[in-house]
Image 1 (cartoon, rainbow, N blue to C red):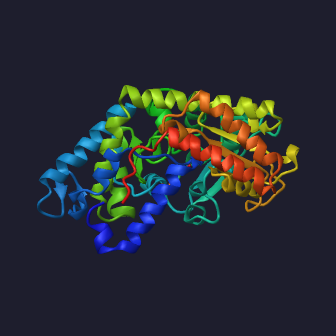
Image 2 (cartoon, rainbow, N blue to C red):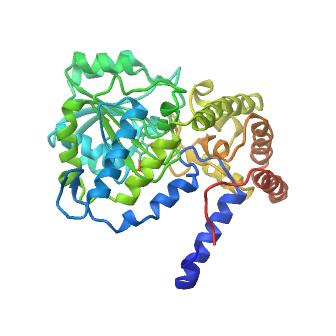
Length: 415
Ligand SMILES: *Cc1c(COP(=O)(O)O)cnc(C)c1O
C-alpha cells in the first residue's frame, strides 16, 4: 500500500491487522479461500471508475470500449472454463445470481423444490428468512436419515406431487457428490427447470476434479470466492436460449451498473482456473479433505455420511459430548478457524449446532498438503479433547504459528 497509510492510517492499520490475522492462522472455513494478488490487483484497478449500465455493445454510457472488451473477455473465459453456452458475469454475489435466475423464468407465487437449509441447503433456496422464501412457494427435500445422503426416490416423489416450476440443487454443507443426471430426469418428468447452485464446489468443477452440473442444468450459479479462489461475486451459466432472459433479469431486473473492477477480477480468476497449477491445487484440496475426514474418524469423530467427496468435512460432535459453538471457539483460540454448523436432524439450534464444518481450500491454496493434514488433525483432537484448557490452546497456537510461517500466504498485500 502506498497512499492508504498516509490518507487513512486508521483503515490502513485495520487492513494490516487483517492480513496478519490471515497470515498467522489456519483457515479451515470451507466457504473461504485466498485470492491471488493478480485478482486483488484487478479488484483495485481503474475499472472501479467506470460506469457501464447494460452489456458489451449495448451500454447506456459512453467511453465503454475497453470495458466492453474486458467484460466480453470475462464472459468468454467463463464459458470456456465450464463449457457453458452463455455466461452472465455481472451478479454482485451468489445470492443475487440465484435471485436473477428465479426472476428470469418464474412468477411470484410459483412453486419450487429445493434442499432444506437445516440439511445443508442455502438461505437463498427459499428459507423464510430470505426474500426468496417470501416471493416464491418453496418446498424442501432433505437427506435420508440413515445414509445422510440425498434420496432421489424421495425427491422424485415430491416433484411428482408438487409439480414445481423449478427444482433447485446445490448446498453449503453437503460433503457428497450430487447426481445431476438423475435430477435433470426428475425435472424433465415434471416439466420443471433445473437450477444447480455450485457455489462451494465451483473450483473443483472448473478443475474437473469432480463432475460438472453444466451439461445437465438449465441454469448454474456460483460464487467466485470459495474453492474458485476469486473475488466476492457471482456468475450465472445457462443454455443460450435463456441468455436474453437471464441478462434482463440481472440488469435492469435486480441490479444496476455492474461493478467492473469485480468483473475484471472474475476474468483473472477464470484465466487462472484454467491452469495446471490451479488443477493441482484443487486435486490437493480434495485429497486433503478425504484424509482429514479419515484422520478425524480414526480419532473417534464421526464425519456426517462417513467421509467426503469434496473439499469439506462435516463432523457430528455429539459422540464427543461437544456442541458446535464450543468446538469453534476452542479451535479459534488456538488459531484454527472453522465454523459450527447444524447437521441433518440436529437437535440443537443453529446458534449452538451439533456439527463443525471444516474445509481444506484455504490451507491448500497456501501450499499445504497431506503431510500437513496429519498434524492439523492431531491438533484439532488435542483441542477438542480439552476444550476448556487454555494451556493446550496456547501450545497448539504456537505450533500453528510455526506451520503458517513455513507456508506464507501469497497474494495479500499489506501495509
Ligand atoms: C455461499 C453460497 C451462496 C452465497 O453467495 P454470496 O456471494 O455470499 O451471496 C449461495 N449459494 C450457496 C450454495 C452458497 O454456498
